[in-house]
Image (cartoon, rainbow, N blue to C red):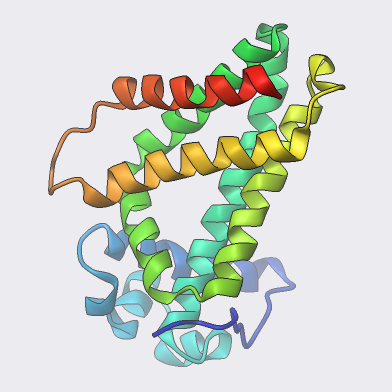
Length: 208
């Protein structure tokens, strides 16, 4: 079932409501590490979150809305973490090339730490996100890359938007496809994957 928009019946404005919504998301994420999304029931989610079925339906009209919101939250967190990483990277990498390499390294490090979850999220995104939602998530990441590129003083004369798009095309494609086609309990060579990504991005950096 494709989701055309993320529908939340009750948008949390108070800390208690936010805590409840986050508990539902966290419970779904925990279950997603154990089984396929379509095998997870709303009852399992609410039981793990410690709330009743009625509470779930205060926030969501169906399970797919919770799934879509979970993906959206992780996209936002990933984009935010990239922006935060730029503050650290710019201090240790005065050269622009090294700055980009460090950002790629930090992004991969974060995803590798939670790779089983990211694999499920990438698969789930393709199952439930329609074109418009997918484009919005893609745009968020490109904008985040554009932001961090413009933080570096050497990037003043470079084409930030084009370079940001190509960096995300490469990193997103390499990471998501590597995770999605990996077999159960297969050990991914993250160091080799990083080398491949850095090599592919290097050409675009040199021509930007």
